[in-house]
Structures are given as structure tokens and as C-alpha cells.
Length: 500
Ligand SMILES: *[C@@H]1O[C@H](CO)[C@@H](O)[C@H](O)[C@H]1NC(C)=O
Image: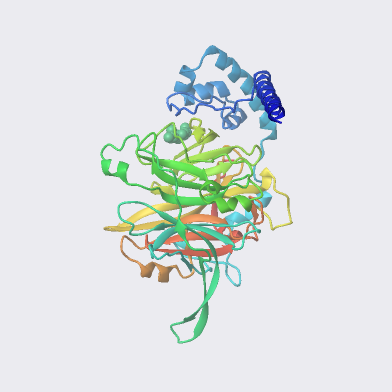
């Protein structure tokens, strides 16, 4: 009995030892594959991370100019830094450029002609005044408030995918948080509220309000590299100026302003699914998450201590992403995204003719949306019929301490180099904008145009002329509002740039 038990135990020991030994042999023979852990080093802006012959050289070759010479003229430093091997590569690139010349396509007159007319029919979509165009669409309230933050402003709105309970996603900045910056996020819907109008009639007032509890949207913090002269800013916690939009692949993105690794403040980008995880299960496009954490959009030339208001474009032919840093009379600066927020040098052609012929202070206001220049179902999206649209702000200070932002529509080609093809001849005002301007009159009387998005999410990036857009407005840094209209109504009384 005792003997048998001992033998059994010995047998067990042998089996376990044999098992452990075979496991050891296995681990030696079949080495587990290591996860590729790439060392992520901060990019050096002085180094050329990507050298590529910019697409603007296509138009140069068109004009009989040698692209290699033009490149040398335009970007001396880039050429000086090149090794001979790289210039050989440039030569083969020239061949590629002339190949792509043949396939380079532009929006056709048949599609763009309507832009240069004013849509003042019966009933009028627009009323044209001497200095502005009044669009016959009413501004309504957007209500984002929490117990802790009863006031928010500068909302940014996108439409949620059809599988969502509520139609909108709203991010708005909080007011009066103290020495820090925060934003609330909620899912929004239309709410009809009874309201007694000045004539004593009860009418329904349509607003967009939160359908889910607004909560603080957290983003990882970053340190500032250099805030010399504005030192207090290096320490202000929290991001600001968030703008949400969809990427061409259907990823929900947020661009925002935060302490910069290259200056004081810069623009950063993150995929919203990383900071608002419930979106992951609803977004059926955009499976590729290119911006899983905060990534700074770099700027090689002309960087300011505080950078603001970038716009992203995606090439209609290649899908490549671009960032346009600024725009004004006689100058434009844009570059291609090279991954992880890194960018190439300035890709604007030195021969580009400006379409803004007024020396005012111009800011890029909203994100850009892609529009197919026909009603839904009447044409297929092609580079010949697609454009980008965004608002620009003309900043004016008419009285002392009273700032005004006038909004202008701009339209660009949907393929690189994204030349402007049309610009508003006058600024746009909405039907009841006067009333809204009276509401808050502190820092200045203005409705700040924050973002533009398709009102309904049809699971596609581009929209059509008969489809509605929702334009989000900040009311004098105190309140939220929006206006909805067919995008066609915005595209009126424009001036053709005629350099394409
Ligand atoms: C980018 O290039 C264009 C064309 O040469 C030029 O007008 C603009 O000033 C440049 N911007 C910067 C910041 O280098």
C-alpha cells in the first residue's frame, strides 16, 4: 500500500519533469516572435524627413519650365542638403511627374459655372446686399451644459453613423473654468421647445441639445518647448479650439490646440475613438486608426510661437492627406502629411496666383468638406466634379476692443496642389444673425464660424449639392448656435480664380 503510493508519486514526478523539459526544448526551438517595438524619436524639423518632388511641379512643366530648376529656385535649402544619389532620384521623379501630367484633372466648367451666379430666385435662397449676402436660413441654439459647466461656447458638430442612437456628436469649450482649458462632449439631437414669440403666440423652437450627459473630454497633455515672452501660457493646462471632422477614410478626428514640442502652442490631432471609446463600435469605415494618440502636426517653414487654424485636405485621386497652414493675400502654405503628424516642406508653387486680393487679416475658420458638384444620384464623384469648401474669417476691429469675424466661403480643387478655384465676392450672413449678435456684446459682436459637417451621416466622406450641412457657430465666446442648409445655398455669388 505504502510502496504503491510512493511509486505513483515517482511516476508523477517523472511525467512533470518530462513535460517541463519538453516545454523548455519547445521554447528554444520555436522562439516566440517579438512584437515589433519601434523606437519613436521626436522628429528634427531641420532635417528633411521626406524628400519628394512636389506635385505643384506638374503645372510648372505645363508652362515649359524645367521642374528641377524650379525646385532649385524655390527650395534652395532642400537642394543644398541633397546628396547626389538623391538628385538621381529626383530625375526619375521628373519622369513620373510628366507621366502624371497626362492624368491630372480639374473641376470642369460645366460643373462650376453655377458658382459664379447669385441664387436669388423666388423664394430667394440669398439676398444680395452691397457688402454681404444674406442667406435665408435661421440660426438656432445649440445647448451643451452640465451642472459644473453651465456655459460652453465654440461648438464643433459632426453627424454620427446611422447605427448611433442620436444624430450628432458635439464638442464645445467650457467657459469660466479658471486657469485651465476644458471641453465637453455629448451626443446631440433636435429638440422642439414651445416658445412664446414677441407677438404672444406659442410656437415651436427647434434647437440641438445634448441627449447624453455631457462629460469632460480628456486628452493627454504635452509640454511646451518654448513660450519665451508668454511664459504663463506654457503652464495653462488643457487643450483648446477643438474641431471635430471625418477623415476621407471615415475616421472621426479631432484637431486641437495644445502646448507644442516645437514652439509654445501647436496643432495636434487624435482619432476620437481613442478618447471617446463608444464610437469604436459604431464606426464601420475608418478601420485604420492612424492617430491612436495625440500627434503634433509639424510645420517646417514660418512656424509661429503660437500656431492656429490648420485645415486638412485629402487628395481625391491618391487619398493622401495634406495640411494647409495659412492663407492670405499673396501667400499660401501647405504640405503633405508623411505619417505620425510629420509633414513635408512647403508645397505651394511660387508661381501660384492668389485669389484673395485684399490685404486684411485672414484666418482659416472651419475644417474643409468635400462636395460633389451635382445632386445625389446625378453624377459619380470624379476629380472633375469634386471640390473642397471651407470658411475663412476676415478679422476686423472696427471699434476699440470690438472684434468682428466676417465669414467668407472658399472653394479649392480636390486634388493636390489644392488651388483655390473660387472665393466669395461678399461675406455671408444668416437670416437672423442680427438678433444673435445682440445677445452677447462683450469682447465684440460676432458669431464665430467653428466647423462645417454633413447634417446626415451617409457613411461616405463626400456629399452632394442637395444635401444639408450643419455649420457650428460660437456666439461671442459665450454661447453655441448652428445653422442648417443645403450646401448649394452657400455656393453662390462667388468670384472665379481662373488660374487653373
Ligand atoms: C510657401 O510657398 C509660397 C510660394 O512660394 C510662398 O508664397 C509662401 O510664403 C511660402 N510659405 C512659407 C511659410 O514658407
